[in-house]
Image (cartoon, rainbow, N blue to C red; front, side):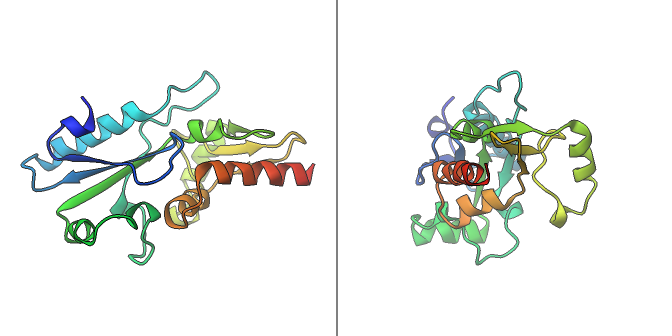
Length: 186
């Protein structure tokens, strides 16, 4: 069932997501229970994620709510800037909940000279034991990382997500940046 066909769920496609970033909103006044609405959101977003290849981690459960993702209200995600004032007010008042999913594997396919790899589960577990504000991005006990042709590897934190959501940097542009950095360091 498509989001547009589900009462209370509103698809938002106001950003160029290159099949990486998926955003949906839940109208809390639609009569859906909180649990049912969140289940529908999660189910729809999981269906939007690409199927992982054998060497990739399944990112389908990497679904976040807007309110759990930003510590500062002034860090308004760029995906909300084109919205009408009334819609933003509904989010602030709690009448609308916004959820997003980021498909790290789909984003990694935009890399040209470097490529996306995943850390060991052991490294991911070690990272998960750190305090939340010091931790890198961990999905299913693995850390996404970029491997350059020269063998250099960057573990990805959450900064690249913040750059896309709050600063408006497009996923393809960020992938090109990592490729360029990998070429310079070669």
